[in-house]
Length: 273
Ligand code: ATR
Image 1 (cartoon, rainbow, N blue to C red):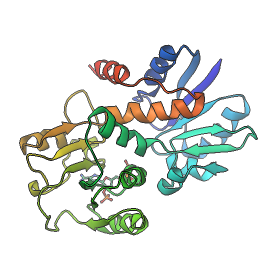
Image 2: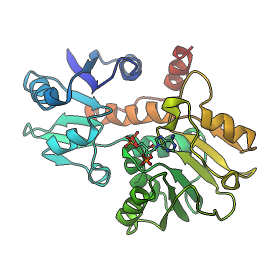
Image 3: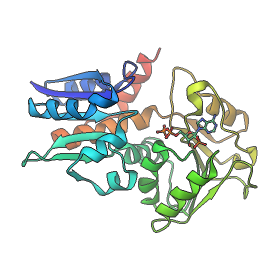
Image 4: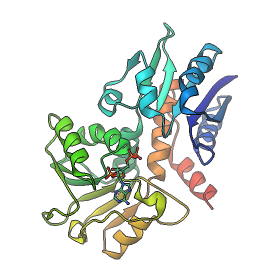
């Protein structure tokens, strides 16, 4: 049987086994997809052994996406921009190949599922860690009017703005800097929600036409989305669709068939309780 897994630490919360088993059932492919929690010093060995013993593909989650990128012999352009991979497989010469489907997952959830355009729009994205680095190339590829990256540690936002400045009009700000009116799309890519915290964003960023998106999700609206709803944003969307869309891209890379995602998003939402 085809073998797949998600590798992370911790990984017990991962919805990837559920998502990929729903995809597999939908397209009539039999596969096994497990969760694998490994320690940092065992990660490289785990990956090598997995493929040496006939494994077909791995998803990589926190905190191993950068480590996995460094292991790859071949990687996609978007993985190179992110310097991180969430998808591993072997090519016909048994070389370890890496891709990063997080950014395209976000773009597909916004533009296809929610019909929110990005082209010619003013984007604000909060955070400057791996999640934002993974998204910027795909967002830039939609030709927004501008991208403003805001981070608590502004130096990290500046590094990202420099790196992506050849692809898009991009600027770095701190949360204290004055903002130039409401944005069209505000994305939370910080990990503040893990602790139930809010990023300290000025309400000026949000107007009645602003779409707000949190890369996090849960069984109730995140702290950020509760706040954006109070500010009167046009829409307040969580990252569950991004999760399912990045999984669909991985599934397609591995198995050359694209699953339908709408029903899977609904089923995963139901499983959150
Ligand atoms: P990830 O891979 O999920 O992006 P990360 O690389 O650790 O995780 O980055 C976490 C991001 O969330 C960072 O941008 C961090 O800001 P700093 O760079 O200043 O540390 C941001 N973050 C975490 N908690 C936050 C909070 N309470 N308020 C604002 N930003 C926060």
